[in-house]
Length: 531
Ligand code: MSP
Image (cartoon, rainbow, N blue to C red; front, side):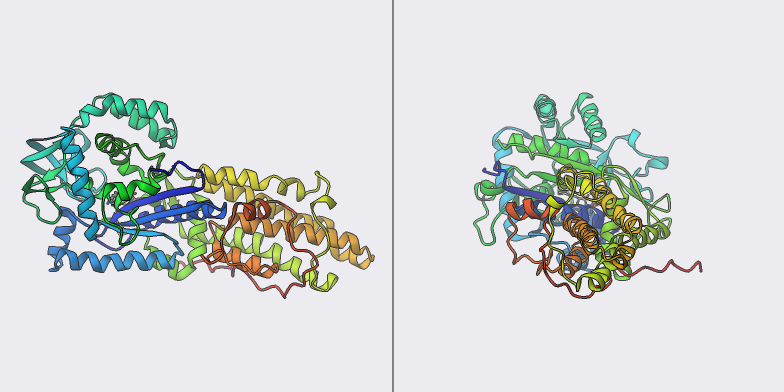
């Protein structure tokens, strides 16, 4: 295990159920993870970004049967739609972990064996209400009217009474309490941490890790009549993903380079599995916990819970087809504070994008490049940060913007990072209007004109660089118009810490370079018609 060095960063999305095509909730977590991964790469770190699919269990099996398909064929089909959405959203993952992959069973078996040897698995009787959509037993008090699941409100929980293998979670109460105490960042945000601490305080019950009457999954190594519970199998998908392609699937191999994983990004509904069950399972197998589990909020549409019953789901494919990847990424990352619930509203969506990306960012670049052509023969003036006072309207914001934004990204505060950057770009338009370079030009004050144009172009460059984890296409277009042969999507260009230190500072625009004519980086969107 050697992922303790600060040059490496491993992160995961949940492994999504493949009982259907991806929904906006899965797209949301994946966009967040991609922006986090891109930020780490931008700083020159070696990154392993894992996503994938959770393919076993009753929920998948039932849906496959309903569609008259073999479960594997059914999974293979849906996996393609996940991969296609990730490509359309410009998600640059490094590993796609499927729980039906051949090497995964070996990892699950070896892990089971370790926990078995530890004496943490025993056979007992399980009685209770099971929500197949959550793949989870529920306490009666957690269910709503007529034993419906509070999350999947159209689904009724089913009564189960069967022999199952259990994991001795109760052995790990003290271990977990100490973990939350000694690693205060382990669960984030703080509200979620408190929820988990309170839950654990009430006392932990062992949970069942096998099912009978279900064959879609791996057999329990010590008793083939049982199938391993889908969550026990799925969490280990994170470990399998750490294997190099074609590497022999052993736990030691899998854990040799990237363990412990730095960050699990998940939604709040699956927090208990990641922040309670998972570290306890790992401890039982003699393994340390991941560094951080971040539970984000839920998305609503026009203020209402999204769901098939209300018929108000937001289709991520439709959204990205209509508006493009950067627009969708920007809205969800900038408009929703990660950790809080957030809303999707199409009118708001269009307003935010038109305002921030077209009017503020695009326009600052466009008008300044236009003036550069007219007043400076398209050449970037020969200036740098030493030519600006610390109270200059743009330099004063830009000089430590890189540090503030890096801190925000590091803490997964994407909305804050975007807001900080926008403060600079918004000031550009005001600064141009206030300083009126066109009249200075008429008065033949060439050096003042150059001083103004350089300040704006440099502020736009810095903003584009810092926004690149969120809107990589637009940032690339801006960088290219500013004379850099640079594509933020390319994996060919090695990004180094030195690059980051240079480009995240104000005053690094290449001087004396002749720039091409401006072309719009983001075209304004039309408001949807009312009918
Ligand atoms: N298969 C499990 C995860 C196993 S991880 C080892 C699973 N899959 S899921 O496909 O049902 O959930 C995927 C993610 O989507 C979860 O993080 C969940 O929180 C998220 N969302 C589902 N609906 C959502 C919203 N309406 N809004 C935001 N995210 C939501 O759980």
